[in-house]
Length: 114
Image (cartoon, rainbow, N blue to C red; front, top):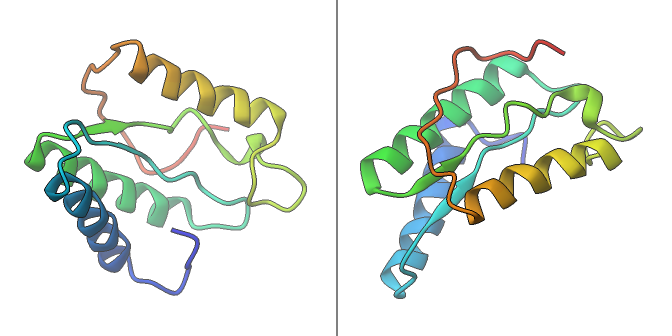
């Protein structure tokens, strides 16, 4: 998802294709971590991509790991990579999934409060 030139649909389709490839190779459980908005990014676009990816997950019986708790203030100076606090939040999201927190969480909007 580092290619900002792709359309929203292209990003969603690429993620779907990758997960399908893993599934067809015998991977038993698929989990897809939502994208995180860049500091100079379009929050609406990120939200729409994540909503699309979450729908793909629901339709295929895969898990969607929602990272909507990680907003732009959790990015480093380059505005792309996570800072220490952002890394901690991402780790907590992934650990919650690994520990069995597979509750369906629904994004309520397309922008971040922070």
